[in-house]
Image (cartoon, rainbow, N blue to C red; front, side, top):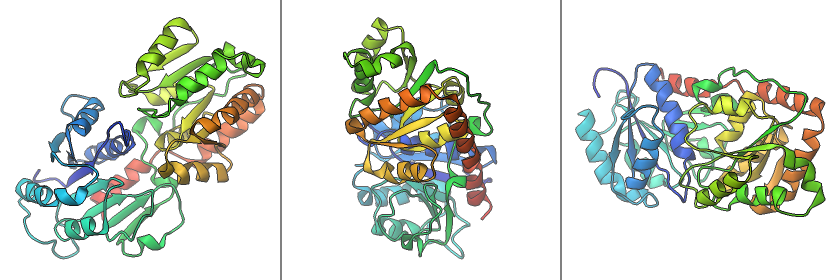
Length: 359
């Protein structure tokens, strides 16, 4: 990877930690590649490798190196990782000067430690995409798009990119076209690639398979479930769709912005999907699938953009109430959509790429 600026993305994804880290790194990687950077990925194991390659726009979109390590014990990978980077870059030795003459290592994982960054940072400039604020990050660049509020954990970071303007959304989310229609017909259910608590299945059962009369108005709508084959309930969802013409399953969606724009309401777990829905302007209700999503869902709720229904299955009744109320109120949907679109412009990945390539 010589000649042009180089960036190595260190991230993982699997059935336990889902695919969010991979997806947002891919978005930033594509923005970097568009600005003529050399880009490669480093993953821990074969499962992460497969999930990453499944999400490439084209075959072999980026080079990938598999460490054959335990993603939960990142400190153990350091000798292999640093030796491999030295061999690839020809930059063996400690970081010199400002530390920015060497290729970047862009890390996105919840299993990093202070020792991990201390060791790695002595050899390569490090960028970290954070949404936990777990400890003091001694890195060259820290990114947190969930909040504009500075953190004492960022005191040792040389540079900081904070707030929603740095949300790494795919290019398709830059100024997408969306219209609030007079009546509701299509509802999006985005529950993460793995949906470990089966929220999509539970919600659909509540709507279609219970005698609850309050759900009757919701039975006329079409439900578009965005998931993946990694979902443990994937075949159950397929069976539900086979017997109910109102249920549609979507996997491997390449143009998510268009799918979102075709829907009138949305239900989503926390994470980057909330930012995407905001950029499109689809009135949305969120729920908490994992604790690391709390900052995002609470921020959107505090801003009055996306109401927070609760945690996993306990959120179902609030989700149903939101869908019922919003489906009956076109003006409320218009107001929600306008506020959401004003909050995010979809250019976060471009801004992160510029910060990496033009420090």
